[in-house]
Every structure is written in structure tokens, then in C-alpha cells.
Image (cartoon, rainbow, N blue to C red; front, side, top):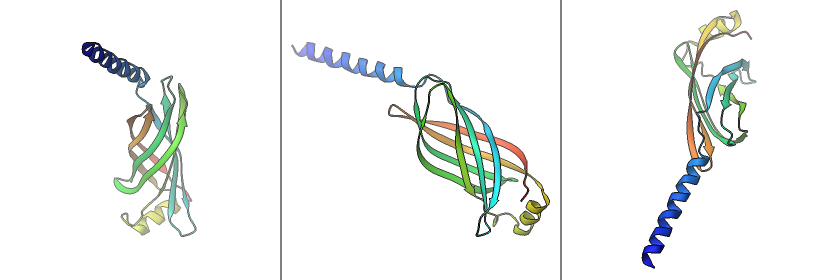
Length: 155
């Protein structure tokens, strides 16, 4: 009788592991890029960067977007950090976008150069680096984000 219970327990554990393995996404979420970048000057005179990160879920499994953690570098200098906790549903086999909103810190850059550059339409190299965190059936997955692009900002 004892041997039967231990065999049944072993079988239940194997069945649970197989079930968990079947629910895990088979393919990695694909980072497609960042676009729709805009800089707005708020009432306090501080620039706010708005952008959208685009991804593709190649799996049939629905997921939830739980976290965005991205640093924004302007001309090689860390100018903003995006750290949002979310709970957004992601459909299977679909594209999805992640809003990126960050307050740019011009203290680290030369403030006068930044203002003149923004007004004059100067080109900047903007780098987005970090990750998003996806949640699937109790399992958390980090998806890396890394993109560099040249951006001309006009106010």
C-alpha cells in the first residue's frame, strides 16, 4: 500500500510538471522597436518623453504585461528612467505596444545646450535599454529592450 502511494505521488508530480511545461510559451517575445517618439514641455517646463515600444507575441498563450523597466540615454548620457508596474493583458499571436513615458533630466546635460538644441531642431542619439516583464501562468519572463536611433526634436 505504501509503495502504491509513493508511486501515485510521483505520477502526480510528473503530471503537474508536464502540465506546467505545456503552458509555458514556446517562443520568446520579439522586440520590434521604439517609435512615435515625442517630447512635450510640461507646465513646469520639464520635458516629458513619450514613445511606444512595439513587441510581438508569437505564442498562442495569453500573457500579462507586469513591468516596464527602461533607461533612456540621450547622446550617451542617462536622461530618464521608466519604471512602471502594470497589469495589461496580451493576446496570443499578436502585436502589442507598450507606452513609455519619462521625464527627461536635463540637469546632467548642459541645460543651455539642451534648450538651444531643442529649439533649433538638433539631432540626438536616443538609446532605450532595459526590459519588460511578462507573466504567464505563474511564470515570469524578462524580455530585453535595446534600441538606438537618431532623433530630431522640435518644440
